[in-house]
Amino acid sequence: MHAYTMLINGVQVAGENGQFDVINPATGSAFAQCPAGSLGQLDEAVAAAQAAFKTWRHSAHERRCEHLNAIANDIEQDADALARLIVMEQGKPLELAFSEVMGAAAWTRYAAGQEIAVELVEETPTQRVELHRKPLGVVASITPWNWPFMIAVWHIMPALRAGNCVISKPSSLTPLSTLRLVEIIARHVPHGVINCVTGEQGFGSAITAHPGIQKIVFTGSTATGQSVMRGAAANLKRLTLELGGNDAAIVLPGTPVHEVAEEVFQAAFLNMGQTCAALKRLYVHQSQYQEFAEALTQIAERQVVGDGLEPGVNFGPVQNLDQLELVQALVADARAQGARVLCGGARLDRPGFFYPPTLVADVTDGQRLVDEEQFGPVLPLIAYEDVEDVLRRANAGDMGLGGSVWGPDSEQAQALASRLESGVAWVNCHARIQPNTPFGGSKMSGFGVEFGLEGLLEFTGQQLLFVNKRAAE
Ligand code: NAD
Image (cartoon, rainbow, N blue to C red; front, side):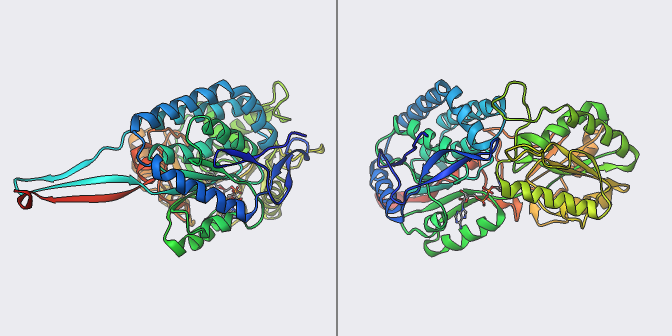
């Protein structure tokens, strides 16, 4: 079994607390071992990052740009091996894993090309006021298990681009592609600029409380995000919190069902539904409910479920048993309340954590499958009659990551979308994200954004330079 190492101060090291198993969700069995770091090793990583920051913060923007482009080249060169590793630790089909890797390279290039300009606030004969942006210091990146490679890149690249040093802490369920990523990054940056530590219970909270860390960029569940925020209070760490979502989509009357069904399906079941901004509640007008349900069922039944490394498979397993059991519990609860399971609805009788794409009709608000984030391959279809009422239901929950409105009249759909209480409102699409479009949640889905200039600036602090010209005369 291949042994992986952590990266501290440019050196690949074993974990002082031994190793733990990494499970392949397509088999349910361990296929690799991940180092279990000690809290002492976390301290070493923080000290290395602090030391490296003294020079990295002053490195020329052009140099950082070159480093990031070189990293993007290496990611692309290793794309096949990285994609296979992602399939084994995460479960997604190979083609999707490959696009995760290539997307990560594209995001890296975008970060390389970004600029942080000095903003001239005021210039008069007597004074000049400028707003400067400075790196924060040591940034800790804590990532989840759904898009492990991509999300690590989303965190690390803008942090480095802005002149910070990084401690990366991947999910213990999917740590291996991140360990490979930091090996690649370390080829191109000075020792200590990037570090990666892995460990189980207690490791995340030790990071959030660590006094040597200035910022945490966290992607994960809302409950853990709250714990991160509590831990960060001690030294007032800056935070970007990308948390859970329960995105609603509203399909307005007259929507061309067969034109949009495929995109709706993909938005809901992307990565087996394990995507933060996946479509998680589908509200369809009563007049088209049956037609929509049939169109989606046909698409669901075409999916080829299996091990993501097998040719032809386009629907992999759920990443872990806990998540699978949550999906099973939500579907069981809906069934008990009279819901109709249109397709899927039962774990496959084979090793691994397989659950086919599942559509559940005749459910409504107030039931767990609608009110809670399923984060898995099941979509509730909810009928509505009145547009104002459905908007109220879409906005009713605590979450506010994304949402969408679909309809034949774009202006009408836009007007409704702008009333969604969500960080992103899509019209006639869902879950589209790009390196240049700021993305982030509202309400209990978190705060702060990633991507675009706004995302980059989250990795900086500001200093106002206020010059009294008279004094110099
Ligand atoms: P999680 O909160 O269980 O874990 C996320 C990370 O936090 C992991 O690395 C984990 O080891 C670490 N962690 C656990 N306890 C910690 C603690 N006390 N302090 C600090 N770190 C700790 O989330 P998950 O199950 O890995 O991911 C699924 C969740 O992530 C879903 O709710 C999903 O919606 C959300 N998510 C959000 C976005 C977004 O951009 N908003 C993107 C992807 C996933």
